[in-house]
Image (tube, rainbow, N blue to C red; front, side, top):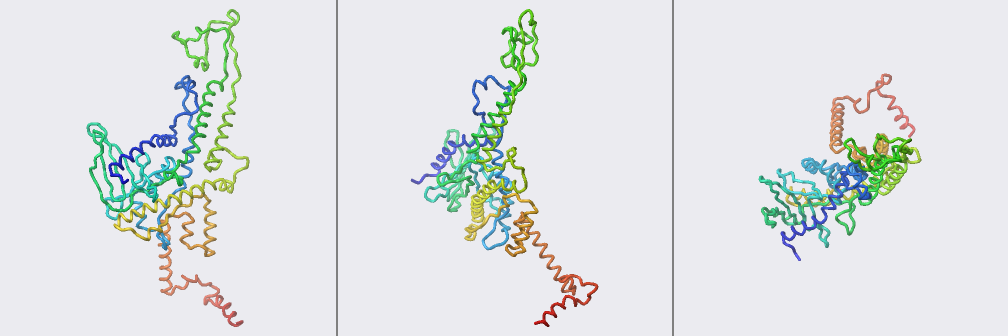
Amino acid sequence: MERTDLQWLTHLIDCHDTEKRELKLLDSYYEGEQPLSYMAPELLAEMDDRVRQVVVNWPQLVADSIEERLDVEGFRFPGEPAADEDLWRIWQANNLDEQSQQGHLDALVMRRSYVVIGTGDEDDIPLITVESALDMFAEHDPRTRRLAAAVKRWREEQPDGSPVDFATLYRPDATSWWVKGSDGVWAEYERDEHDLGEVPVVVLANRTRLKRLGGVSEFKAVIPLSDAACKIATDMMVSAEYHATPRRVAFGFGEEDFVDEQGRKVSAFSRIIGRMWATEKNRKEDGADVVQFPEASLSNFHDTINQLARLVASLAGLPPHFLGYATENPTSADAIRSSEARLVKRAERKQRAWGEAWEQVMRIAIRVRDRAWNPEARALETIWRDASTPTVGMKADAAVKLHTAKIVPLRQTREDMGYTQVQIARMEEQDEQAAQDALTRIAGGDVAAMFGPKSADDPDGDAEREPEAAGAAAG
């Protein structure tokens, strides 16, 4: 049954409201603001505000370690050796160097982010924005697996201080803008009949599966271990207050002896951690005595945290040194690169999936700009920076060998070296200028520009021609 625009709007908003609580929780884990887990309520009540939660923010490390290896450097049409300048101009005009990074990060954290394409202020520059999953929701058509509709929501404060809810509904043939009245009813106030034939929204979904087109958070396997580490670290701090300092036991004292300067009773917690005690009782007359126990070791907490770190490294594909613990074998450059193999592979998988998403963004942007679909854009290629971290010397050595053996051309060699498309274009301009200068000198009679200067011992160049003459005579 075909829904009306109002039905689509209310349906998508209801679906978005259903998942927003979990999305906010995932966001809090990245920011290190998650609630404390595994802690007994009685202990929390006793500690009050004296000991804060210690956050071991492994989820942030997992997300950042992958996102730092995802940098788009351009787009290339089929059959073209260089990146397309017009598409890169659109990219730069929309500040997508920064926005793409934010979109990748939000997708890793909250399952997905969204890219919206529309008409910009300039005719030749479409407007492209990256949106958070906290503000947008989209639904796929179960038959075509393409987007059927999407909604973006925001709230504005009126001059009188009252909030007003707004929404944008994206459909394959039209985009409409809505406002929510004081009676709670949505009303359309603007509409754009673009007739694109598809929703001008692209989803950057993380770890999609056939039944999970909305993606899965990169934190899914790490959150339980991170919660456990936060609990152990917090317990360690509590133990540092209770046991890491020498504990004392008092004999011959009553409840009335534990009072402050004003004569008020102090809590049990204050009795335990108090640094100085004063009393009129003595050992001889009252039988009072104070015994000190040795302090406790915290090594069991350290071992537990290290074990949890190993589990996180195994599940997230992180090298051991990322989590701050050392392995039995001494580290070397080769060992470090080997330990990063799984992380690099994960980043390359993201590049493949999100490369297709960014290509779709550019296809729609071309359609918005030119008012027609470009058939060649179907084979558009996203150019990514190398996700691995080889040394400069290793990259240069491998690139030079491949170019010298005529396996790859010079431009690909420069891309493998990690130069940006702008840098490569500038190098090619300098190469062309140098070639033109050499031809100009040759035309002016400067043969040394091509063959080099002649030797002072051989001003006529006979030494170079003699081997050729000897070869001719032998033939």
